[in-house]
Length: 487
Image (cartoon, rainbow, N blue to C red; front, side, top):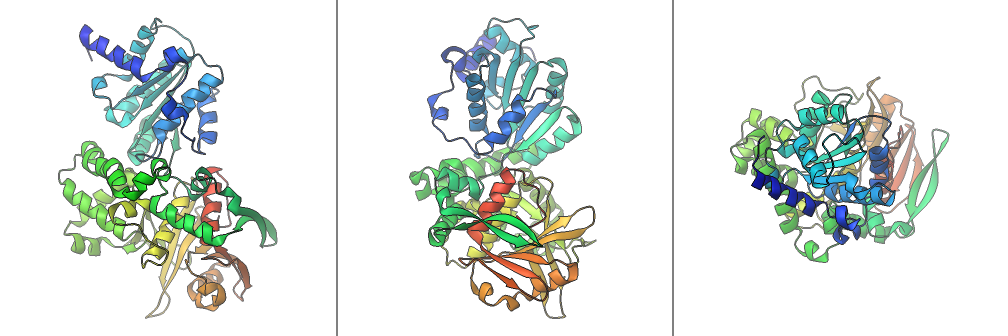
């Protein structure tokens, strides 16, 4: 793109504003004062590992802290001795950068700093909200190939769309990093309540495994319900004012911008109100089983359009579709039903109202919260099992880990917000049947407050408070712990 001298000066002025460390040597205090997300410990080494010439693509939904993580990375680089003028940040969605190629922006930055276009110094260049540049992946691939001594890091909010383009055009050039909403593990640490959790051990198939119990299960459960209502987004966690009206913040800054702006601009959606009503329906019923036929009748939206909407909402990281298996963990050849979960339960609170621990919807929201810990886990195939046990009774297991190669279950978890089944384990007939069918000697059942173990004919049921279980899964997700045990 060609641009005149006046526009060039305006762009240079904006670049100076967006990169205050060029003159001040540090990021703004607004970002310095924010607590880094725990994912920072994984992300920063990826950025600084220069042994492989790749760009880092940071993906995730709106308001989870991607921009803050970029700023914290910049400060970390400065603290580690990287010259501040060799670090460049550009928010691609800024209107003045509209339709200007990435390489032109990079060269304008070097020009602003008094360096030549041919300067081969080591740079770190951050392009925020990259999805607003058409064919960004083509331009980024060219930069990676041309400037081999520079680390390019880009971020964007349309995770699945970014990932698709990254895989198609960036094979061998891009490394993807997904930043999800807050896990319960992060929430507890941000609120400084980790002292409530105590490490313990359980015996699992003659192996000793680590897990967590709590010194105050009632307080931990209060925090878990708070997490369900407010815990997905860092700004909400630390603001009592936002928690008084989470709907205004989350609906406006997360939901409306995605539904009314991001998705229509990315996919050419014409009827945004129809998309909004479909998402509202899904959010209200998060954790329930859906079928296109029933959804179409309830919403009045055609089935082929519903499929596209669900694909788009999943691309924006607002929802996650979980597929169904039968009692032997085999996929159904013709998928007629599936479950949909919000990627974080606080999205439902924003659209409707906070829930209490005795609310009739608490079961689905607890299940949504547990799935929210699993969704970001890479390399783990999770599903739910549902089958016709008798002519009148359906069998179901809430969470099943699938060995993709063998198409067999590695583990099974039944998610409960109740102590009833810890006292009456025989009522878990579907889970016990599933264990027997698949030769699983152990399974996890979450409770509200109880930790205990039942040895059944079918195998061992380990009962763990659901808040402790969510904390453990969230920790293992962040630490990229590989598991065959349901956590």
